[in-house]
Figure 1 (cartoon, one colour):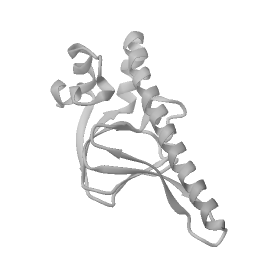
Figure 2: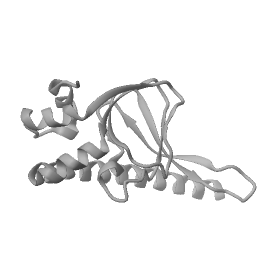
Figure 3: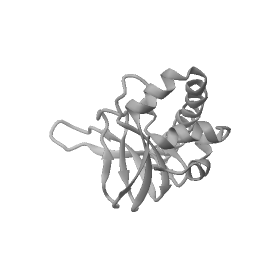
Length: 161
C-alpha cells in the first residue's frame, strides 16, 4: 500500500487531511516504466490518474501530415516529478485525450480510475475537493500547451522571412 507521507509530497494533494489521503492510498499502486515506453495512447480507456514520483513523461498528440505518411508525435507538455497526469480518468467520457510516453525511467503512482470514481461519488465533499485539484492540472496543461503553440507559431513566422 502507498503511504500517506508519499501522497503528501504532491502539490495535487495539498489541503487534504490524513484521513482523506488514506482513502486515496488504498486505491493506489506504484509502477515503474522504462524510458521510451508508451504509458497510454490517445483514445485508450482512462484506467488511472497518475502522479510522477520520478522521471519525465511527454504528453503527446498525433498530428497527421498526409494520407500516406505516418503520424508525427507533437509534444504538448512534459510532466516532471511531483506532477499529475491522466485527468481523463475522472472526467467523462473517461478516454485519454493525449498520449503519454516516458523519456526517462519513471516511477508513477497509479490511482485506479473505477475505484477512484466510486469513492468520489460516495463522498461528494471529497469529490469536490479532488475535482478542484484536477481542474488545476487541466488549467496547467492548457497553459503549457498555449506556450508551446505560441512558440511554434513564432518560430514558423520567423522562418517564413
